[in-house]
Every structure is written in structure tokens, then in C-alpha cells.
Length: 132
Length: 307
Image 1 (cartoon, rainbow over the protein chains, first blue to last red):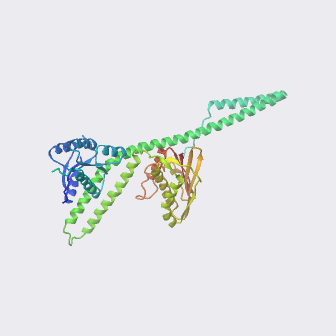
Image 2: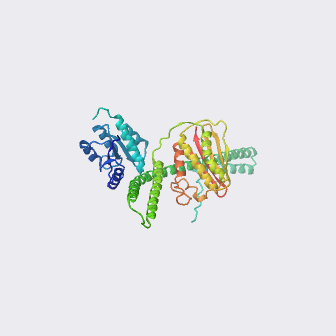
Image 3: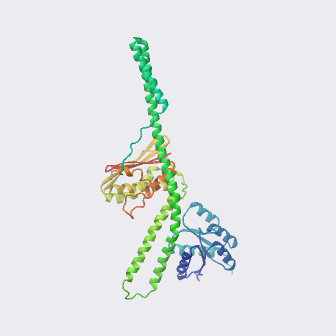
């Protein structure tokens, strides 16, 4: 039985996250959207997520800072960072903080869903079997 | 547009003094001749000649130093230009990526919606689909441009390793050769035997060589020759030259070709980023990148790299 990942999309551009949510939903994913790192952290205290898709450039808490905080709350959550540019330093920061991977914006829907799927697979593999 | 004549380089005051002394010595020689003091006349003539030779030698040295200085200045101005453009273009590319991402997604969503519509007998619907696909294609094209812009601007830390230059060039040549041959373009290799290995970044250098080869093929069009030369230029440097007998570059464009976005290709065929990127790369590798060209005769790009 293939479980459906619970996905959280965090991006300050409203139209971007709303349309992305619709696109992911028709592919059968359970999607929630939020507009800032702060809101994401508050939501995490209430709900559990499997994969979080995070924009790197946001006002307030940026993606990297949010990633660090997410890992403190629940290190098992896999985080995918969406970034406007690929720089080696940013990639290293992401990996050091335990991020799953990053994608260059704009990316195709296929790329994103593939990444979400593999991130979810890794989460399932890492979770202890008796955790229910 | 009138071209201003370059001002002749001002002669430094010390050289003026040297010339003055030389003239005085000649006058002394004349004076001694008139006064029939033969020994003194010959003596001062010899000294006058020596003075003249020294002065001319000094002058040529000064001129050479000035020429080198202006070459270095030009290189510095170019790299400063690059840095400024790099900053600006990176900011713009970031800004554009967000709306691009949204447009791309809306196209995806439209595709999904249109897939669900009952379009039996709906006139002109296929044209809607076609237009929408075109939007998607153009978004993809913009994406390539912004990603190229960003890779131009980002801080590239070259990954240094020992590289066999002849082999690297040969690899890139083989990539280009098949297509070139079909256009009647012959590639001639003139590699220096036993060229020592260089400490440099192979992928970045491959990018440069490939770019130059593609430019050369484009410049020739049909039926021509490209010559690849490698040689040891000094005990601590080697030179790579990519030469073609194509259309050449007009004089007024020569100092613009390394500028970002400068291109003579029709729209859609080139972004104008290739040569400016090459220049940045070679500079980061500690080398010099230069060009000579003559319209309808050909162009030669020279890369000088430290060993």
C-alpha cells in the first residue's frame, strides 16, 4: 500500500503556491500551503507533514533559517528548497542543515513531483518500523 | 561619427633633458671642429652619439612599458565591467524567475483544465492548445536565459586539477568535427608535442574551447578551415589559439565582443553571453584572453594560461 505524502508548500508568492497546490492535488498529493516560514513553524506544532517544499527567498525568515528551525522541531521531515539560483555555498548550507535537496526555479512539475516522491521514500525508509 | 586621432604619448621630462644634452654635445662637436680642436671634436662627437643611442633606447623602453600598461588597463576595465554587469544581471534573473515559475505553472494548470473539457466539435480549440504550448515553449526559453545569466554571475570557484591541454582540446574538437565536416569545414591540429600538464579547471576550459569552436564554425558558414594551435609560450605559460578563415570581425565591434549580450546573430540564435563568459572564465583561471581579426580574412582567439 503506497501511502500519500502530506506535503506543505511554503512560498511568499500567493499565486505560485495556490496553483502549485492545485497541480499537486490532482496528482493525488495531500497539500497544504502557507506564506511564510513563521506560519510554517506554527503549523508544525499542530500538524504533521512528510515533505515540506520551501522557497529560499522569503521576507522575514528565509528558507535556510526555516529549514534549520524545522529540523529542530522534527528532524524526520524531508525539506526540499526551491531556489532562484544554484550556488555552491547555498547547496552546502542546505545539505549541512539536513535538507533533502534543492531545485532551481522555475522547475517543471515533473521534477518537483519526482523529488517529493523520492524525499517521501527516504522518510519512510528512515522511520523506525514500530513507529505507529 | 568622427574618430578622434589618438594623442601622441607625451615625452617624459627626463627624456627631453637627454635629447637636450645630446644636442648640446653635437653643438660642442661642431664648435670644436670650427676651432680645429680635432681630438675634442671627435671626443664630443662620440659622446654625442652615445647619448643619442641611450636616449633612443630609453624612449623605446618607455613606449613598451606604456603599451603594456594600457593592455593591462583594458583588461582591468573589462573585468570591472563584467563584475558590474554580473551583479545587475543576477538580481534581474532572480526577479524574473518568480513570475516565470508562475506562468509555467498556469500553463500546466490550463493543460489540465483543457484535458478535462468536452471539446467535441468545438471550433478553434486545437488552436487554443497550440497557443498554450507556445507559451510553455517561450517560458522554457526564458528559463534557459535566466539560468545562463545566473551561472555567468555566480561566484565560480574553479576546481583545479592537472589537465592535459592537447587531449582536452582534441575531445572538444571531436564533438564539433562531425557536424563541421558536413559543412565543408576542416579542422587542422597543430599541437605542441610534450606540452606540460596545466593546473586548471577542466570543465570550465572545455566550455571555453567548445564555445570558440562553435563560433568559428558559425563564422565560416560553409567550406573553410579552423586551425587549433597549442604551444609553450614561456617557461611558465602556454598559449592556445583557435583560428578560423571565416567572415572576421569588423574593427568597430572588436572591443565589444566580450560585452555581455553583444551578438551579431539574429534574434533567438544567440544570447551574446558566450564570449563574455569565456573571458570571465579565463580570467578566473589566471590567464589572458585576446582576439585578432580581419574582415573576410578570419579571426584568431588566443588564450594564455599559466602553467
